[in-house]
Each structure stands twice: as C-alpha cells, then as structure tokens.
Image 1 (cartoon, rainbow, N blue to C red):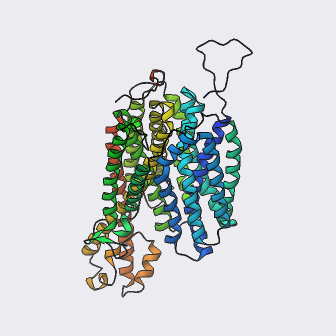
Image 2: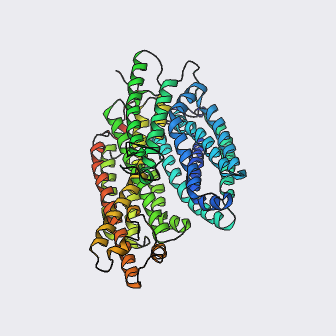
Image 3: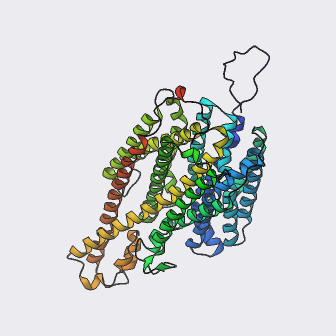
Length: 547
C-alpha cells in the first residue's frame, strides 16, 4: 500500500506515487535481526563451550534447533499473519525475538541457549512471511523489486557483520554482548513498525492443524536426515548413529520419510482446497511452471551457497587451524559482492527478462566453481581464488533476489504471506541439504583418496596402517595428524609421507568437490530456462490462478 499522494498539486491519474523508504528500513533490519542471530551462533561456539563446560556438539544443537523450528512452523506463521493482521503480528514477534535474545545474554546454562533459539525460531517463522507480505502491502512495481533486493542484501550484510563483530567481541569481551546488540536492533525494528501499513486480519481464516502436523514432521525429518548424513552414516549405520533400520543409517531413513510426508502434505492440501476449506498454504503460488522453476532455482542457489559456506570455513579453520575471524576475512569478498549485487540487479529488470538474467547468473556460478577447482590451493587468500569467489558472489546475489522477485510478482497481494512461507521452507531445507551434501561429498572423496594413496605408498607398511583407523577418516590439520602418528610406531620418514598424503588428498577432494558443485550449478540451467521471459514493464497484473 503506497503512502497517500500530496494533494497540494494536481496529479495525473496514471502517475505513480512513490512510497517512503522509511518502513523498508525496519523490514530490512528485521531481516538483519534473524540473519545476524544465525551467523553469530557458530562464531560464539567456542565461548559457549568454555562458559558452560559442554562439548561443541551440544552447543551446535542450538543452531539446529533454530533452523528446525523456523522450517517446521513457517507455513503456520503465514496463516497466523493473515488471520491476525501482518503489522500487529510482526510487531509482537519482533518483541518475542527481543525476549529470546535477552535469554541468550542471561543464559546460565546451555539449556537456556537452546530454549532461547527455539523461541527465536518460532518468532522468525512468522517474521519471514511477514516481511514478504508487508513489502507487497507497502510497495509496488520498481520499488517492490528494490525492496525485495534489499532483503537479500540485508542477509549478506548480516553474515559479514556477524563474523566481524562477533569475532572481535568474542575475542575481546565475550560472546554475550554479540546477542545484546540484537536487543537494540529489535527495539529499533519495533519502533519503525509503526510506519508500516497493512490490511486488517481476517478472522474467517482457519489454520489447517492436520496439514501443519504433516509438513512439520516432514521438514523435521528431512532436516535431521540431511544434517546427520555424515555422523550417522551415508547408507550403513555408523557406531554413533542413534538408531538404524536393519543396519541402514537413520539419516537416509528420515530423508525417505520426509519425502513421503511431503507428498502426503500436497495430497492433503489439494483435497482440503477442493472441499472448499482453507489450506495451510495456497498451492496457487506454485501452480504455474514458471513459479515452480523459481522454487527449484532458489533451492539450488541456496544449496550452493550453503555448500561453499561450509567448505571455506572447513579448510580455513580445520585444515589451516585458523580462527573464525580469519574465515570472515577470507569470505569478505564473496559477502560484499552478494550484498552489492542483490541491490543492483534490480536495475537490469527493465532490460532483461528473468530467464536471461538467471541463465547468465548460473553461467557465472558454474564458471566460478570450475575456475576455483583449478586455481584453489590450501591458501584462500590468493588473487585467483578471491576472483573466483567474487564471480560466484555476483551470480549468487543476482539469483537469490531474482527468483524471490519472480514469486512475489506472480502472486496476488493476498497470497504474499504464502510466498514468504515457500521462501522460508525452501531456504531452510536447501541450506541443510547443501551443507550436508558438501560434507558427505568431501569426506567421501577424502576417504577414497587417502585409502588409495596409503595402499600404494611404499613407505607406509601394512602394520603401520593397521594402527590408524582408516574407517573414520575426516578433515584434520597436519599438526593433529602428527599428534595421532606420535602414538604409533611411525618413523619420521613415515610421518612426513603421511602428512603429504593428507595434504594431497585434501586438495584433491576440494578440487573434485568444487567440480561437482559446478555440475549441479550447470544442471540448474534447466529450471532457469522455464523462468518468465518478460521484462519488468511487461509483467502482467497478478491475479488469483484459475483451476
């Protein structure tokens, strides 16, 4: 909804009146609020381990909890927003998020941290669709596209600032002040929410409890399954797996269960809509092939980003033994590029169609990943590597904004909340899948490389190999490997040989892994070719789809 026109002068009937950008500041800061919270958790991991005296895996439960709650409740959140009214529920959830951050600051135990992240996730499950709905209510046409782009920029800015601010505060003061900052941000967002405009809620909208239960269990199963492919076993259950089915790892079992329940949710939703009852989500927002293509493209690009965000810290912090602050510096060219591109890409909507921009962007991400696979070394700060990250950031930043914009502009205003829930579910699942895929792929490649090298190396006899657990190979630094070999009968020559194998196998795994990601990026050209072929001035007015 635009701000009323200035009536002090005559205005042409067809003249577009621009809305104030002040409400958008609040919406962008709300995106910062959520994204900063997520990015600050891994940065604060070391401080929490020291404060609470728990292992890192226990602290990581808080990270998983947030993502699970958001993904499982975001569709319910969209319906609550439509029922209560977007401005009112947005304001309430921002206040709830502030309470969650206060719990983080005052947490006396890790249990409080986990509970705080569960509460923050529940609030974010409503804030995510609210952002889309409020943009649709407050902005139109070119302003709407720019507003959507600002959400992508805010997300990239949050990741960058969380690493920089969190790393500095965590080193100098402690991890708690990092989350205290978010309380201040939440207060600012709450005050700015009074500049927003929105229609009142609709009490006639009911919430599909059965559908919410089905999709909630499906999302939890998929997320837990993909997140635990490494630790529980890719196919055969590992000793650390909490359960197995006839020797099969629980991770793929949960993935299959999640897929089945996901299909059941779509069947149930169609049946409910056909009977005249309000479904949990309107399937109209993905009824056209162009809209489904946008969802597929969004899934791929977020998964690729998650895979890269997992791979770079893995090599910098584990292989090189450096700090999270070093990681943020290495990722700065990528994050800055995504931040800038997400804002600037809207300028090209008037000249090129989404299909053209998407194809070009996926070509950039594919080319960048291929380039990185050839130039990457164990040092991420080389000029060729930075260039590859910048090119990938251009493609990624353009795609995240583009596909989101396609979904918003294709749907009528009253379905903007449903678009937001599709976005939230897709991004959370894609992030889990991308991270898990990268981890499983790299560890598998490393295991194969180490196994082959050890078997053929003349300086590593079988009796020495038998003293090392080659069935549990993972990424470790050279120093850690030397500590392990010190407990064996390895000579200095054999230690040097093993270290060189470790260096070579890690780099080979990285190169092949990047090439594999490039292949997935290239395959994404298929859904990109089904995106709309119109330019911004040719976009048809969104209206409810017909059956």
